Structure formats: C-alpha cells, structure tokens
Length: 300
Image (cartoon, rainbow, N blue to C red):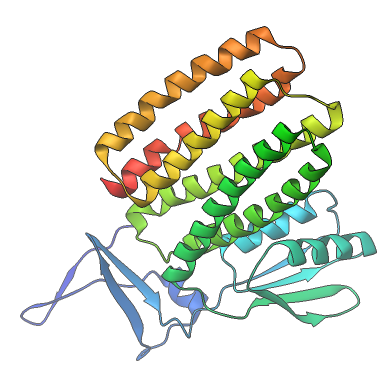
C-alpha cells in the first residue's frame, strides 16, 4: 500500500497508519508502537508485549488435511489458535501433531469439542539461529548414519535413523514460524525460508531412501556407496559454505554438482534395484544444489 507523506509544522513529516491494521489491533490515540529501521525499510509494529495474533478454525468437514492444517497455522506464526473438532479421530490427529511438532505451543483449554493452544514463550533471533544449526546437524547426522548402516547391511538399524526425520521436521517448522513472525531482516527472510524448506525436503529424501532399502531388501553395491558418500559430502560442503561464505568455495560447490551428477547417472544406467537408492540420492543432490541461490541472496 502507498501512503503520502504530509508535512506537520515546519519540519515534521508524517504518514497515516492503515485503518484495517489499526482496527485489527485496537490502536488508540496515545498508544505506543515500535518503529524499526532495517536497511531502506521502516518496520512499524506493536510492542512485543502487545502483539497477539489469533485464529479460530472449525474442522467439521476435514479429515486428511487436519494434520497439515495445524502445522500450517503454526508455521504462519499465530500466537493463539482455537480449534473446534467433532470426532475422536480429529482429536487424535490434533494431539499427535501438537506433540510431534509445534514447539512452544501448549494446550491452555480443552473441552469436549474444542481446543485452544497458545504460544507460551516469545522467540528471539538467537532461537532461530540455534534451531537452524540443529536442523543442519541432525540432517548431516542422518546422512552419515544411514550410509554407515547401509554399508554394514544391518537394515534393522535404519528404522532408528528414520525416526530422526521427525526432529528435522520439528526444527524446520519452528524456523519457518519465526521467519513468518518477521524476526529476520525482510530482505533475506524469503531466502532463509527457502533454505529451511529445502533442508526438510532433503531429510524426507533420506527417510524415503532408507524406507526403500528396508522394504525392498536392497543390498547396495560399492559403486552406489561411493556416490552416497559424495552426495553426503556435498551436503556438508553446503553447511560449511552457509556458515562461512566464500565466493571461491561457492564456485567449487557449483562445479562439484556436475561431477557428482555424472557419477549418479552412470550408476543409474548400470544397476537394477539400486536405481531406487540412486534416484533418492539424485533428489538430495539437486535439492542441495538448488540452495545456492538463496545463499547468495543472504550473503551478497
């Protein structure tokens, strides 16, 4: 929206606040608001203690979308969510998603046909940085442990590795929530969001790879193991580049993708069952490579 700048007195410039925003948050004459300068942007907001965003939702006609819907409301950044349900299966889904994801949400009201959840602590920028780091480290841990277990041909241990995917999902949901609550500089928040979302997708690819090995009783050959190792290293290279950005290292990162891609395609043409593992590895490679654009936006 656009606002005209008005001159008040000899030197004071003023713009009006949007009426819809004023009504939504009950802004009155004399109220205090925060004005923060971020680059060429001025961010006008309520004091942290005053900001409460809420949402009410009725699940009456919903079934399979319940789980995703609650996750989306959490990531959107709402402080309070009132939920009306009409079946025990919906309640089970609600309690499941709240226990597995949505860190910071607590049930503060529980009736026979409704729940109210509320954020019990205000997140800070350092919370985002710490949780994003954990997300990276858990993802790298999954990549290394899955390879180690597959090499040892002890696929029963892969189920333990798969369980870590839920933590990656939890951390990535938390990071996206904080980004939607605008705690990161607006010029880079979209790029951070893309990176966090891709990290979750990479975690899903490792999970699906492990499931393929278990369900199809795949014995991965040594050539595919080598490709697996290279893809894992590529992910670690991105992690290192993310936390210590360097243009020369970026160039190396971009070139390495082509080398690993050739290895992948060569093995895909040769093998039968391993093609499932190789396809998952290819998805991981591409997802990792595609993070480079957001990384550059953040750092350049």
